[in-house]
Length: 447
Image (cartoon, rainbow, N blue to C red; front, side, top):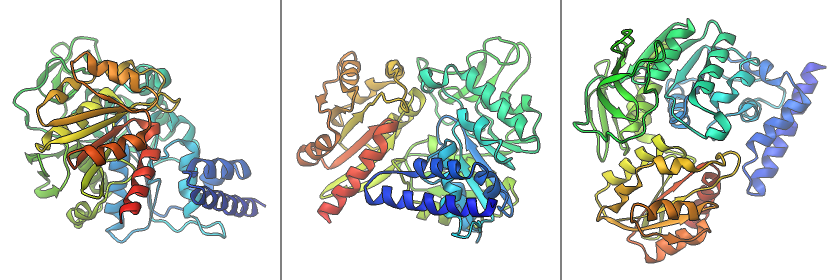
């Protein structure tokens, strides 16, 4: 009876997924939701069929990129992997990843699973399977009306860790918050990070989390910052400090491309954004922790095509377009840094929504360093989305004029028509899929 229920769930979920794709809707979470209603044990049953290891990737920023890179790195080793590539990282999305890869007779053919998991959803997902490894990227303030303060997220993650006592943790050692969490969990853990100072000067006004030591409450001090609270930290009172890094990125070069050395292995990727070093390093560290050689990792990076609005590139006519997700102050500031690494003249579109998945509180916009867009190579800034007026007001306070266009498709078409041929589109969460689909369709129109 259980097997028949599982088969019915898989068939139904596939039909729902197909119908959603045909109608132009995402539909991933709906497929998982229906599968779980038909067979509440389906995730437990399918995950048990993974032959080797299950990874989960958690953290505020970088989950999707890290998880997808890890998946492709493992696939390059000749392994079969289950992965929620689309970034649907709550329970229904995770169920869907397993269900849509299962065979029609209810069996799963997979060596590994690479699953991105929303931090607040870990306590709902871990009862269905116990991961072998957790990759913990960072913890920043994100969607205060949904997650609350960071302490709430840390408590949820700690509770989830307790549900999987044999799970090993691959943690960002440059983040005092994730490092403290790993240390206090009692789990075996390894650290990755950037041990050497790269930036000679950092913005002293930048919003930083983890100002106070989680062990004793004293103010943390730093030998240097990379960005936000990431860097070489120490507590002058209790001795809590950044641990020795097991996977230490050295000889860093950033700009038009990223290069660094770890474990005497030189890694190179044609990406912008210093923050991507952490994503690349996290995936590498996780694979090595699991005993994989990752001898093809540079080939993976060379072929890797960012999806779903994570530095995703489009070309429409003569205009080059980069779409990227920016959903909280730390992530937005790093997006701005990546944009400003491009010294060419550029147009910028910023889309801000306040749907439930975005967080209805957009006060975080005032913690973002938008004044950097006053540079001379910024041709125009357009604001779009539900809260475009809030975004326009935020820019007005730093004396940056903006074009108001609530409709994102019209905003894009206008900048293609009247822009400089170099367009960056920065969107928060619920604008991502729609903007991605608009750009894909427009690429087809011009093909």
